[in-house]
Length: 546
Ligand code: ADP
Image (tube, rainbow, N blue to C red):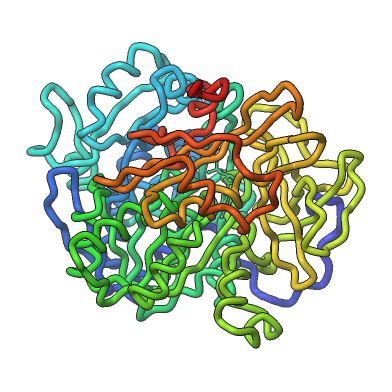
């Protein structure tokens, strides 16, 4: 009897529990010599391969079992993208324990809240996060053990355990998998822009299905000959599922560790001849600016996956025109494992258009792969047509999409048709392309109509002097809310408000025109590297006086 009460019938095919350890086994068996390159906190680059990764992950499993970790127990990681972090992932999940990836950029109160909420028994942490760990330990009574993801030499002073000591001497002869694919594999908390962070618990089955979905040509389209670098951190919605997808493909894996500044990223991209890479727009904006300033070229990169927030047009053009790199624009969220839609690989009708028109579609968030269904609705929950104009609340369904938050009992958050409300607002066109116009909480409602902050930002960020742009709603006596444009200029640039307003003129509807423009030296970035509009709203509760 399955979860829907249906009886299993006459299935003559082999039965595999779809558990994620199979990715490591597959990579080790069929791509064992394929390289895994990792940069540690101290800047050193380690070279390994999938055969070794799998063996060491099994040794990690043996150590966890010896330490009393059992299926269903939560083991947290507080770490950047490194080889030891990937080994720990598979080591934890392979035995049915749950890998809780924790975002080290959160505030202490959020960190202790989620560690306690998850009742994490062990914590595996990068040595550079020792100060955070020391502050957290007294506040997290359930935490039994902290292991640093380093060798003895890299261990912080006073720490009692490191990863090499933990797995050293352990047998690699550990059984993986062979439990229900519906078991929990991973746990990730949303960054909690409103209220406490909420836990999203992934099952082995949802992760495997997600990997098969994103592996398609329509989505990430990874191949064994690719070299994939993971800039998006593993604590940000499982690095968008890339650690699974890259190993399923047997591609070479490059892990940049904590060094995400443009020179370090460029060095690794070139040195390892990376062909595929994923990250949020702010990372790319900074990298492209650096390349331009230094007149550097990307010699090997073929595809970049950009998501987490809308890809600005200037970024897409720069990749295409200055570097010959194809941009895959993805939309999704932690609750969706995370992929929802992808753009870049077009339908026949769109592929027949001229390049400029195609770019317009690439800038949209894209189409659903098999395994995701979506709808847009009005305030009353009625479905809206897919005409590319009417925008509504975006709701999604699929086997890798959340039904209930972790620790929330049986309370489903789905609507009557089984769809999850994403909190995003968007349109869907006749070709099936989703365009996100806003997050419900960032919406600007002016005189009863919605203004798309995302679209105005996108255009403003294309101003030659702009590095980043944000548009927020500011209260207005007549229209209720009006847009304020906030700009961070490129280093050394100066500009006037009139220059920016003139730049927007004719590119957006008149009533969308920001009422004012302010220039800031720093844009507040949230824990996942995206613009933090909550802080901007607090910074600009009203239009600045002139
Ligand atoms: P948080 O941003 O709160 O850390 P997530 O990483 O899960 O949480 O972010 C999900 C949200 O990010 C989506 O609901 C959407 O608003 C936004 N987002 C993600 N990708 C895109 C994109 N390509 N374009 C526009 N918005 C995006």
